[in-house]
Image 1 (tube, rainbow, N blue to C red):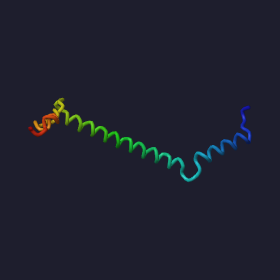
Image 2: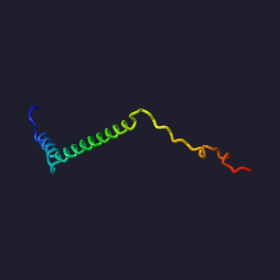
Image 3: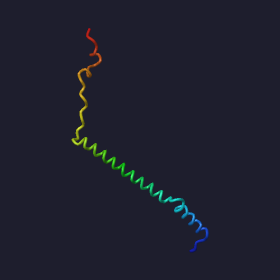
Length: 84
């Protein structure tokens, strides 16, 4: 029970070839992970800068009032008819 048979060694050999063989699979995988981390950090920095811009715009805590309508815009359609 303590020794490994030929089948065990073949399975280990296949696993080692899959993991470490084939033109730098590990290197490519780690490069992709690094690109993903860099992209994540960049987008997090973009989100923080947008939050800072929004905070500086609303620094007073006040909301701007709506634009004031002129008297001509506030009249009802019946009031806009020509006099008789």
